[in-house]
Each structure stands twice: as C-alpha cells, then as structure tokens.
Image (spheres, rainbow, N blue to C red):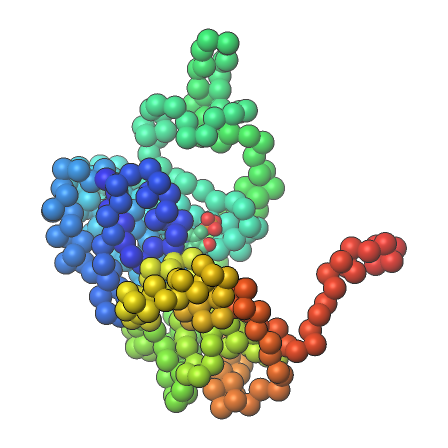
Length: 353
Ligand SMILES: Cc1ncc(COP(=O)(O)O)c(C=O)c1O
C-alpha cells in the first residue's frame, strides 16, 4: 500500500495507482496537507503501508511539507518514504540525512527542467539496498553484467536501473545546474525568492478583482515557495495567461498544472460540478476547464519583474487590454484574432537557406 496525498503532481500519484493500493491523504481548506488525517491514515493502515509518497513542495501553491517529520512517522510504522523534490530542490536545501537517522528520506526525486537544466532529465536518488534487490524496473542494454540464453546477471546499481542509451548531455547539464545552484548557495536563492514573494503578495493583494489561492500572507513567505496561484474575476485562466503572454511578454502557466485533484480542491468544486466539467471535456469541449494561472519565481527574477506582473494583472482585471482573443474549444486556449503563424514556414527550404 502507498500513502500519498491529494496535493501531488500526477507524477507522484498515477504511477503508484498503477502498481499498488493507493490511499490519498486529504487537505486543509487552503490546500495544505492535513497532518491529522495523515497521522490517522498512517495509524489505520500501519502494517500495510510500504511507502509514503509525498511532495516536498507543491508546484501549485508552493506549500512546503514537513518532510523530516513525515519521514519519522513513516519509519515508525515500518514504511519507507519517497519525497518528490521536483519543486522543492531548486529553491531550498534538501537534507536526506543518513539512514540511521529516523528522519531520513529513503528516496528523493528531482527533475532537470525545474532546476535550470534541459527537459527529459531527472534523478531518483535512493537507498542502494533497494536497487540491489530483485530485477530492474526497466530492462535492456546497459543493465547487465552477463547474459546467456538462459540466464541474466544484473549489473550493480545504478547501471542496472538505467536501461538504454543514456541522456548523457542532459545528465551533464543537470550536474552543472546543481553545481551552479550550490555555488550561489541555496540560502541565497531562498532569501532572494522569499523577498520577491513577499513583495509580490503585498502588491497583488491590493488588486481588487484578483483572488490569490493557498497562503496569501506576505509575512509567511519563508515557509512556502514563490509559486502563486491566481484567478482574475471574470477572466478565464486560459485568457488571462494568453493576454499576459501576447501583450505583456509575461509567461505564466495556466490550467491544472498536472494536479487535477488538487485544483478541484482549491476551487472547491462540488462532485456534481466536477462531473459536469469532466463530461464536457470528454465530449471534446475544454472551454470551461477549471484551472488557475500560476506566477512563479526563479533565481533570475527581479523586483521589476514583479512590478511588471502586478501592472499587467491590474490592467487585465480592468479590461484594459488591447487584443481580441479567440478560444479554441478543443484545448481551451486563447490566441489573438488573426494570429495564424504557419510553423511549417520555419522549416521550409527558403528559411533554411
Ligand atoms: C512537484 C512536481 N513533481 C513532478 C514533476 C514532474 O517532473 P517530470 O516532468 O520531470 O516528470 C513536476 C513538474 O514537472 C513537479 O512540479
């Protein structure tokens, strides 16, 4: 059995559902992990939980989970813990601790594209004894010592878990990105992002028609990441994001951020409302897809960037934008009227010459 939560990115939820009985811990009203419920479910299923799978920080609200304490609780019932650090690791120090510390993390995952490295690279860091046991998850070239027609001797970890030709360039780039973050110092990174988040929340909270989700308190930014989910009243999230991009050159993500159950919780959709949306989406119409916009800060962002975001959102919320936008019902996304770039042109012979 795997104990996970409703705030997970799908990547720390769906794989467990496919391979184990998966129990989801619920959330508080504002979207934090409900620790009382975590404790109760851990106690309820104590002897059956093999793994606790929890995010280190949410990619939707920036909430940071108390991973050391959750680890200690997991170990107390004989379970192991995997912490999804895709969102946490680029912004805060992560200490896995040694295996003899009850608060240690058994496994940690990181994702290259979230830490200034290319897409398609990541790492699962974990206890050697697990990877020495049994057969590899994926088998193929590079995973073996010896193969005969009747027998296979697996290589030592990590090789036995890395089937196929590796993404060497991605791995080198990820290592370089991590070294760069370490050189800057994670405390410096955290301090900068905390100041930006405080500044942003102070200013954003003054925009009348803007709803901020999760923790809105500008004084509490040391305990969360600079990820701010937003909704402008009367402006669908896909439209708001399109205007920010096309007219203001500001990239925010919009939609459900690969965390559908979490978004339904934050938006407080009733089961009937959720069903109605699901039905229309399955019928090919995503025009009313629930979701939010999400502004998030990296170490390259500045206070001027925040000013630009606040100014742009204020204007949009007052309907002071220039373009006329057309929605594509199949994706829900908006583009400016008349915006028809022909991407094939970019690959035509005349462009290549
Ligand atoms: C919290 C969190 N977990 C997992 C992922 C998924 O990482 P990947 O796309 O590398 O599988 C992301 C974002 O992409 C994320 O924000």
